[in-house]
Amino acid sequence: MVGHCFQLALSVLQTKAEAEIDKARKVISEKDAELHDAEESLTGLKEVVENRTARMLMTKLVVCISFLDDTYDAYGTLQELELFTQAIQRWDISLIKSLPECMKAVFNTILEMWDEMESVTSKDEISDEVPILEPN
Image 1 (tube, one colour):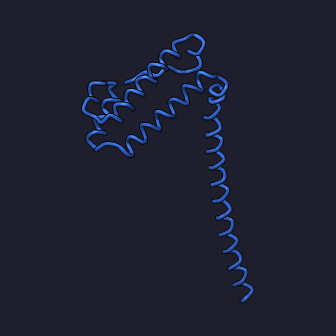
Image 2 (image 1 turned 90 degrees about the horizontal axis):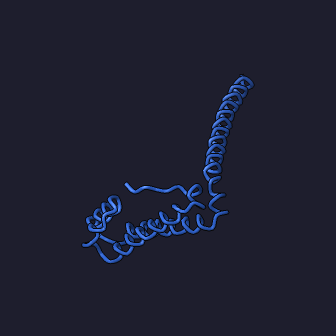
Image 3 (image 1 turned 60 degrees about the vertical axis):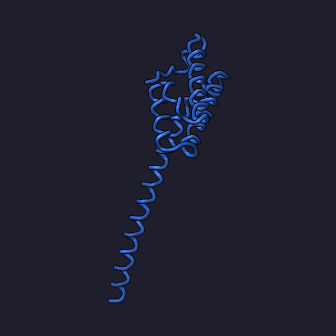
């Protein structure tokens, strides 16, 4: 009887262990898939790294995103931030007249960067390498 109980307990433990191993294998497989997807998405950066102009534009874009993030995190009231968002979505400089100077500076920086991106990407030597974005 004790041997039977021991075998039953061992069987239950083995089943639980196998279930945990299966879960671990599934998690590992999912993480492998995520890493593969991340690697695939980074493949396009090879061209950016090899192209000086694309690197410059990418860096400026990251800086602008950082400015935007800081602006939303630390500056302005909810009403100001909503107006700021509308100005960016519409590309309407008239909407920023009542906003604080820091928001005006960020908005103008974004417009200047956009103009530079349009100017650079319209040149034949890079137009195929950097997609031209269109504002809404």
